[in-house]
Length: 512
Ligand code: BG6
Image 1 (tube, rainbow, N blue to C red):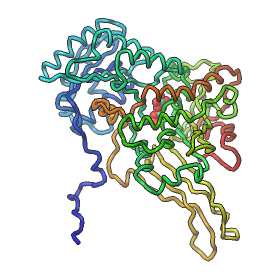
Image 2 (image 1 turned 60 degrees about the vertical axis):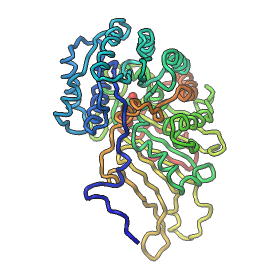
Image 3 (image 1 turned 90 degrees about the vertical axis):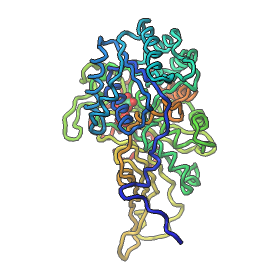
Image 4 (image 1 turned 90 degrees about the horizontal axis):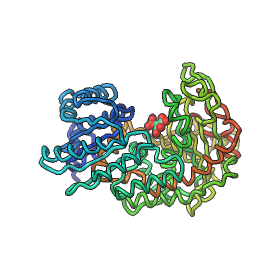
């Protein structure tokens, strides 16, 4: 038999899927182009796409924000942002070329002149490219401006170019309550069709989050176990070691529940629990995700106390550094009850999952940054080994680590070498870093490219975002009603001890 062909030296056959797909000529308009997100994430992501040759041959960029800047000043600031925040050292030629023709329109989002200028510049760019460019409008602004900008785009007929596609990319948070999300959906869908709308949840752009689907649906061994018969409970953790930094203005109104649970954590939960889609097209995948969200019973306000814990950090020490408590952070009111930690016990009430506790926790200023999904299987029904060694038999745990040390590990019982039948848990591990030998792209690179290609699989659909809020809304309402302050936890710790109550007997949170 002929042996399989060897890959050329220096190539890694496991990274083949990273090859790029074609993208139609596009102009990207960033509203809020001088803001923090644009500087830290969007402009560096564009650079890295350019570096890899993934942007279309005809690509144009227009920035808009309130600051008075010339085109030249905007270009210089974009270059500076890439130098500071790009994941790779920029190549000067690629960097210069990327922003050489970038345009800037200054003005407030409500100003007609901004949109009139866009209406002049966009056709000029088409003319110059010799092709009608698809238009992507990226709303990277404070959320109160989302409806303002969308209405302006509609009023100035920018949402429907002849012979090309227009798309709108909307950052989070998409509303702050269910009613607001509904109203925002109505406004957006009065100007754009759903297929043109790309609601960002950057967790969906993370390679390791997409790997949840690969693990489940590309392997025969997990799916038979993936149900209430074999799974005892699921723990999803998104802990951060940083505090709120300079974001008090936003964070004190949002809190951990809105900031991370309503979006990122519910996304992780739905990917873990969804049924296999017919294919990986945007609607098939999102149909299945929405079914999971609908199967999660939205708590009544009275149930909230038993199924949630909220906490707030006090002064402490994170990784050797003394840090202030939340109430002493700049800009936080001294009597704030905003939660910087949230833990929830949910149940996906369907045939596959009924009765399996799904516990979620997230918080700022905890011991360590880690995002993981840990699936604990039920214990074996009978332990045949007698004697002291059998005490080491523990349930299997499958851990999908989203970050850092991206990978998958399975805790299994193994015999400790020696004459006794003593068992210990050991780890079988797959680590992205060593298996693929390449740096994963940043989430925003993948998402910007997908939006430019019109593929909405990794974006949140209108009914999905409303189904998320439907679960979160009663919790917000109950927390707002109570006069009790949140449980306290020391910065750098594992979070409030009260969170233990959500797990039930014989279960413990994993160490952060
Ligand atoms: C953002 C939140 O959506 O996600 C931040 O607003 C949080 O508060 C961040 O720090 C976490 O993202 P990542 O990719 O660092 O896990």
